[in-house]
Image 1 (cartoon, rainbow, N blue to C red):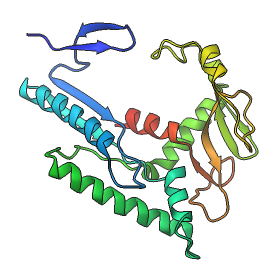
Image 2 (image 1 turned 180 degrees about the horizontal axis):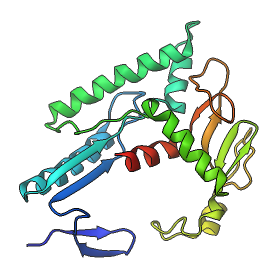
Image 3 (image 1 turned 135 degrees about the vertical axis):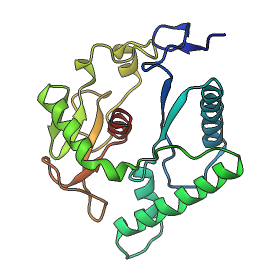
Image 4 (image 1 turned 30 degrees about the horizontal axis):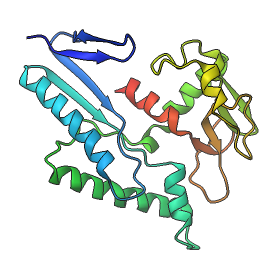
Length: 222
């Protein structure tokens, strides 16, 4: 009996056909490790555990990748809440490690298998910078005072998965104070570093990646 999935792109249930005979690659956007795991984390992990095991049951060799977002606004905000004079970067690292271990423990208690590969965002900063540079070169991204934004209107298929037009999405978007982007829907690929924040050298100055670029790099890389 064939395995069928609902294809979000086509809007139809379709027969699964592997890119490589007998092999399946799965990439799952994993946790942002800044707090205790919740039922949403459990649901996502459980659903993909079932999918993974069923593919294995059907005889496929599965390569399962689930990332860890260990640099993010939420982690930095958590570090600042501690009202410590210690280095914010070090506190961020401690927070990420603490909640990663808690997440891993609870996934194990639920019977969720560990991924075959578990990349961390901070381990792939050079690759993120390389992809951002490519997007800038092709006109899909632009630099403003140390920040880099993705130019949404340049990508004609943006919104295709959700079946919403760019104009529809822009109607509900807004530019936050301090942002210098061209359009409300544009999003940050690289953020200029604020004092004491975790940061890395880049062609655009010291900063850190935006959330969107992280999984783009790790999913294509693995």
